Length: 115
Image (tube, rainbow, N blue to C red; front, side, top):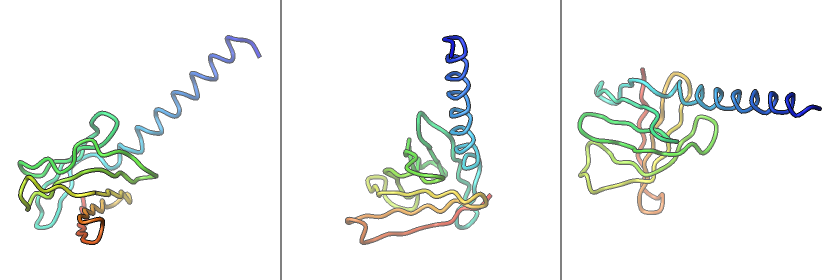
């Protein structure tokens, strides 16, 4: 294989991987509704996801850990700002399930958001 052909193949594979990663984040980003029709916006920030509801940044840069799954620190908009939770976000295509846990995962609460 020539160097030129090898570089072409490498570049094509890199672009394909980049587009696949962007597509995986694209579905979960956008405007969602949480309980009581409260609006939530999810967007890509850095290498992770961010979300905000009202004046509360619910998560800031949580990292992808699997197919349509992100994990990281998050806040609950209905609780005091100093409280943080170990959070998991799972995107199913039609909904986003957000779960926050504290005290070593023994106390958890989850919500399902819809478009």
